[in-house]
Amino acid sequence: MIRYLITCLTILTLLLSVCFTVSGEQPGSGKLPIDLSGGFPLTQKFDIDLKVYEDPTIRVERDKVFSPEWQCTYYPAFITIKDASQLRTLPAGESFQSRTLTPATQMARRVNAVLAINGDYYAANDSRKANSYILRQGVVYRDTVQTELDMLLIDEDGDFHILKAGPALAETDKTVIDGKKVINAFQFGPALVIDGEKVDDEYINDPSHSPPFAEPEQRNQRMCIGQIDSLNYICVTCAFHGIPLTKLRDLVLSLAPVKNLYVLDGGESSQMVFLGTKINNVKEGGQNVRNVSDIIYFASAWDPSGEAVITVGK
Image (tube, rainbow, N blue to C red; front, side, top):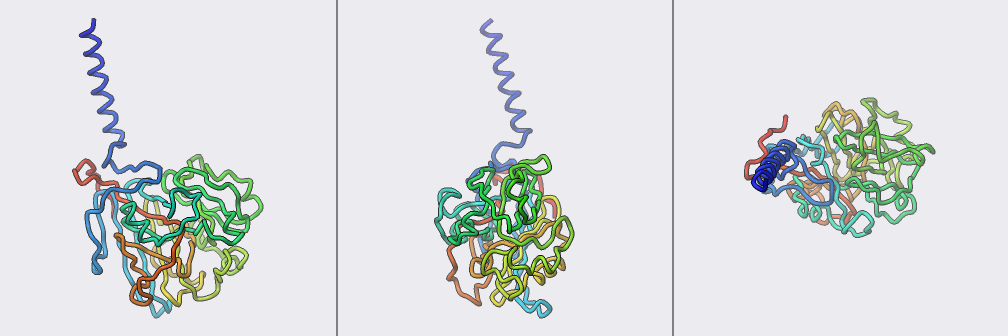
């Protein structure tokens, strides 16, 4: 009887092991935990001439373009990931309840980010931003809402959803959308493209839909993030003299057919970090950067031991 039980337990253990392996939850499988941990170590070091980082779970292609048409230098980055968990957020402090500030480069290095950009500066001291909604890595840290600001929700499949500003925003469930759990939410904006449709110039240029000092019609440094299609994204930042928001929308649409496009914190907070090094405004502005409260980043889920073998699409 004892031998029979031991045999059964051995078989059960083997079955569970197989199921665990097939499920793709083991390290190197292409799925990261939904928490404040980071990605797998990077397999390449930063080089000024390196434009593409790629492993079996992620591909990031970045560039620097001076455009007479748009009268600015802009930095586009195209990102494809294998799993939605590779699109992540991180606070400068221990949690998203902290008001700690630090350069985006330090946060990016902490979590092995392939590409990182500044977030929505949730810890800003002015009264409007201090009450904005905070849902990060599946946890609601602050449930107050700025109803005049558009909101970006990113669900468990990595899909973007934009909720336009208005009184109903306060009462809307922001933890679930279209039956899927929301992993990250942002309040800065405004939205530039919603469900494939350009947001009207009049709405974008209305300063009541932007945080203070955003000056939508002025030439300011900008940062935006957009979804092109499933697990396929674009981030664009404009250098120094910058660009008005409506032209930023049109610039991004000239680069990719984005479904949803959303503005994040700008000005000196605009920071794009590739393999741990800030790549925007480096020659023009030196290495002095503003401390920020949070980053959005894309991480590798590949274990170099070879357990992850699925190649990401291009």
